[in-house]
Amino acid sequence: MSVSAAVLPEVLPRAEIEPPVAGPTRRRLARIPGSKAERRWLLWPPLIFFIVALLLPMIALVGQALNGKKGNAFAEALSMSSFTDAVVRTVLLAAIVTVITVIVGYVYAMGVATAPNWLKAVLMAGLLLSLWTSIMVRSFGWMLIELPKGAIYWFMGLFGLADKPLELYQTTLAMYPAMVAVMLPFAVLPLLSAINGLDREQLNAATVFGAGPLLTFRKVILPSVAPAAISGGVLVFVMSLGFYVTPLLLGGPKNMTVSVIINTQLNTANRPDLAAAMSILLVGGTIVIYLIADKLFNVSEKWG
Amino acid sequence: MTDVSLRRAIGPFRSPLLILAILASLLFFIPFFVVIATSWTSGSFLLFPPTGFSLQWYESVIGDKLWTDPFKLSLLVSLISTVIAVVLGTLGALALRRIRSRTGARLLRTMFIVPMALPPVAYAVGLYSVNSTVRIFKPTLTAMIVGEALLVMPYVFVLVSTALGNSDPALRPAAATLGASWPLILWRVELPPVLPNILAGAVFAFSVAFDEVVLPVFLTPVGQVTLPLKMLTASQEAFSPQLTAASTLISLLALIVLGGVNLFSNRRARRARASAKAKLA
Image (cartoon, rainbow over all chains, first blue to last red; front, side, top):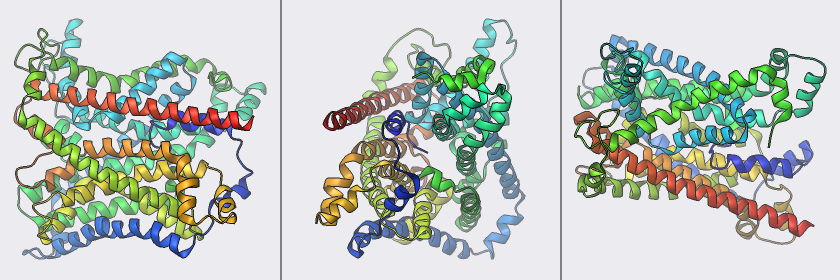
């Protein structure tokens, strides 16, 4: 993704100004092996940082999981129905959020691409607002909307529809709009750059030869934006697996995700070994899913 | 810039598409406006619509050390982790261009992007466990800073490596042929054109780090609280107008700073392009 919306407006026009160097030459020139000294100074500092910041905590997790006093923490975690239920719930939640986010994200990106200028500015402002304000603030907003006497209740009251306070807050349904809103930018941005990169000649050709919007969508637009939709979707899915704050604040005790369970094991049940075992399962699962998707769809390449 | 081809291609579906997009944008706007509105209430409860208008809650936040201290701590932690992330993320993006083997480049790229997929709670538990083994970390902010730097590094890496990929690939060999050493090439040839993206990466990394709430839950030393953590605990203790006033203040600050930087860097990039064009002509 041209990740940040901060650069987005700038990346696009530049592509128009500089005609790309012919493909293969450019690719060959793009990576010229550096000298030994270059590799030492450029590659080793980040590598060492990754060992300290990523590998070390993972090793510590394994150590902590094996150090429990009650035998095998992994087996215990997997036999706990509260954990396995949370795993199923979390995966399902992430899948639903991903599907909704990608579809809405496509509509949003198409909206940005085809809207008149004033509306385009409004839609981009919405994206930036979401990227630039704290997730806590956004969650509070949803809480205020969904509370029994919150904004929805007030709004319905205007039309005389609300006879009794809502029972929406801390239900499963309450989480979805908030989670989709959190994830939407991560789907919209790659889709938007894919849509902007669509071959206009192909589009024109399709129209000239009489293809209707549906046929054009199926044969021209969809194949071109599918890679972006997939890589955005993969990222949204793996990020959704780690959801913590939103379900905690909006979903209530019935909707505990794996992350919430891990926190409970560590801080309430005082079982650091179980928390560690569950963390390993969660990290391991997430990373494996990501790596498989990366292998299949070149997700990292689309982003970097 | 009107996209005629695309508009024609989607034909009659344009209006429903635009209406749906507007509805979707409400997902972004409404929660934000509701938070702002509730914060100016003159009553002492969080109510929507607000009762009356007063700025009392803003005053109470600004004058309260329980809010200003976490703000300063968040500023400090995110600044340091942003510096780490920007330096190392940029080094990584530069290194990516110098690796001959495709597999190596692919591995490096994946390594830099994977932290985005890392579930924050599980990662925080890992850091917590390192923290409790290595005693010197425990009373300090080190583990939290390192962790946040790792979580935000992908954003810097992606932005900088995209920009490097768009720059002219022939410049580096050309400079090398003319006898420039690699640090000189790096400093005078490679980095200047991607500076706006490095800046954008820094801003993005800072805002994500500032926003991080899960790591602080596990890793703040006794007696210290970051702002998002303060907001989380405050929301669980008493959901009050003070909380939404603090939320509004911090959001407005973020919007002003980030919007300003964005305008500045866009203008800078436009000027750079214009002057490059003028030189060519």
